[in-house]
Every structure is written in C-alpha cells, then in structure tokens.
Image (cartoon, rainbow, N blue to C red):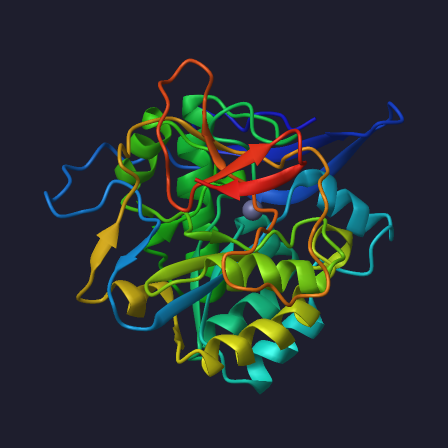
Length: 336
Ligand SMILES: [Zn+2]
C-alpha cells in the first residue's frame, strides 16, 4: 500500500511498504527536507491546460518514456527480486539510433539511479521531465495505484521537482500523471507547481506487455503528425519488450518520413493539442485481456488493441482522440 506522503513541513521521510504476504518493510530513503507547495501562480492565457500532442501537419513525433518508481518497486530492487529498473536494451537502442526522447522521471527513480539520471540529463538527445516522486494516482481509480491527498499531490510535484533539479541539474517544465489519471483539481495542482501536464496521443501499451510486435502495432497504427507516444524505460517485468519494440518502431517511423523530436521541440512554435474538455476527469485504464495482434503487419484500417481514455463514472461522456470502442461480441477494439 502506498501511504500518502502528506506532510505539513520538514520531516524525515520513511516510506512503509506493505506486501501481499502481509509483511511490512520500512524503506528508508534518507532525510528529505520538504517545503510547502508553492502558492498558486496565475497562468498565462496561452498556457495549455493539458497537452496530448501538437497541432501540426509536419511529420514530427515525440517518443516519451516514463521512468516509474514506487515504494513497492524500490523494495523489489532492495530484495533482489528484480535485476534493475532501467531497460538498458531500450536505452541502448535510443542511443545507438540517435533518437531524441523525453524522459518523464520519478524523483525516487533518480534517487535510486543518481549517476544514470545525471548522465541522461547531460546527453543532448534526452529531455528530463517530472513524473511525480513515487508514482501515486492523482485521481482514483487508476489501475492499482494508491492515491494521494491534495497536500500529498502538491508535495509529490514539488519534491520530485526539487530532487530532479538536485540530481540532474535540470528544472523540468512538464509533468506526466502516473497512470495518466487526473481530474480538474489535479490539473490545478500541476499548474500551481509551475508545470504543464503532458499526456499522450498514443499509448504504446508496453506496460506489462512482453509482445514487442504488439507494442509496435499499437504505435504504428495510431501515430500521426504531432503525436506524443507514451512508452516506458524502467524495463524489468513492468515493461519488458520496449527495446525490441523500438527496433521496429524507430525505423518504421523514419521510413514513413517522421522526424523524432523531444516534447519541447515538438511544441516549440506549435499549438498544443488538448482534449475537447481539458477539465474533465480522465482515467486511463487497461482493458480486460484481449488479443494483441502479432506479428505486426496491419493492413490499412486494421484493428489493434489499444487502451481508451475513459472518464470517471460521474462525469459526462467525452471522446479524446484517438477513439476506439470495445466490441464485446467480437472481443476487439473498433475505431469510432
Ligand atoms: Zn508512470
């Protein structure tokens, strides 16, 4: 269970990790000086509420990679249950192909890999952005993530910002919600922290997915000019096929005439693409198990399994592109 890190002032942070077996392991992450959340800052009229891509006809695509770290993941690492939470294979593909990428890094990941975090920040092809401190949900339900209080959300934002600045030397401008889950209050919190929320146009579906060709299919079937593609770089059992998928995706995108850029470059001088109603609560969810096409050879207009964006039950229905609808009878996703 993830305890909300709700703190009124400077404290010593000890995160308690509960496991399914019932045992509880204290995970000491060191003394952390915590400051109160910054007061809300007025937003310039042209600051996007939440970005899901760029409005452009130019063949630009931003590949983005989340570097998740939860107390549970840190405990797995500490116990030797995983070899590491960095996908060296995927990182090697990005480096050897010279592919620019935006890395949404959790503060806790940077604390566990400070040398690598700094090295990535110093490589010109990578852009470091904020993915919270310990990856809680900012809106529930959100997969199996635990939630945070409003004060905990503010702390997650400001503390990750401080940790990333200290370790990498970079001050992030963008924030990605863990699980992509947010509501209006969460958006307010991000803007109050001086950050701009960035979601995605295309979910590459590499989380907990060993099927590299399925990941590539999800990306290639949905990509379009100005798209932001969401993938993961922490590897391990949480995203095992990202490297193999990149070996398909990067050449395929270039073959289609796409230039790969960071989110910062994608948005430079471009109008941000936003959801139709950016204030609606959104929950990204993983549908119940459905077949993923393999191998990747989708003809035009073919169907692929992709997650859809869904609102919280109480909110009214909206569509966020790309729109796919689950067909229960055929057990496939159909394009709206
Ligand atoms: Zn994440």
